[in-house]
Image 1 (cartoon, one colour):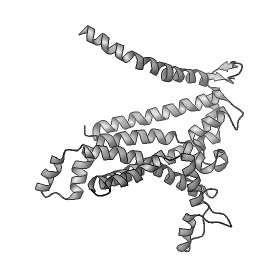
Image 2 (cartoon, rainbow, N blue to C red; image 1 turned 45 degrees about the vertical axis):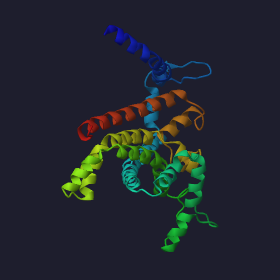
Image 3 (cartoon, rainbow, N blue to C red; image 1 turned 45 degrees about the horizontal axis):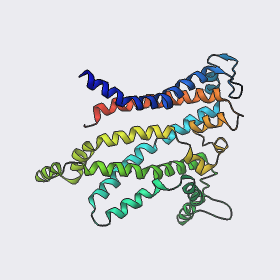
Length: 295
């Protein structure tokens, strides 16, 4: 028995070393940086140790704006998950052209983010000389053009949310289609004998049987929502603060390199706050999934 345990630890050793080198050590390093005041990468010096970095970011209006945007983006998680479930059920039910439809739905996942962002900019853009497709459709209903890219905050957030939903949909559909194919067909046959409706079979059989995958998508969706940055840059450019569309990751990135001239201590403090938020939400989701998920 002890010999088997020793073999198990030996097998786990490479993974443990990699996790230590690329996850635990960087995390501890960032925690240390977050308490070192006015740390400079070039000289490797700092003026003191304390909570000044945290005090700064919690007084910074740009940080609160980034948190607000990241929290609003989270609404895309339940919306995209519900749509993905419905599409996955539909794809799993059809027979002809099933592979073709699966390929079409998966295309956004392998398409370059910045290229797709440019297309979305053209679709939702509005200038005095040119209106995108979205404003052309609004014009059919006699609605004045809306500049979704440089216009009001709600319009920009609507486009960003729509883009994120479109971008994450393929992966969720792929995971859910695989989960649906693993459901035992005998459950549906027994339900049909009891003359259960399609809706009842969906809520009583399909959803409970794929609930572990749904929980996984929700947890990873919340994590991904707080880590959003590339999609916002693809739509609104690098100066997200000017567009009022910055996220927490964008705030950290700006603190490191751009607008502030580079303040790694502030960036480290913001990164630790982001880590605490994601860790808390993940723990809550895991606790809820233990009671609501059918394993």
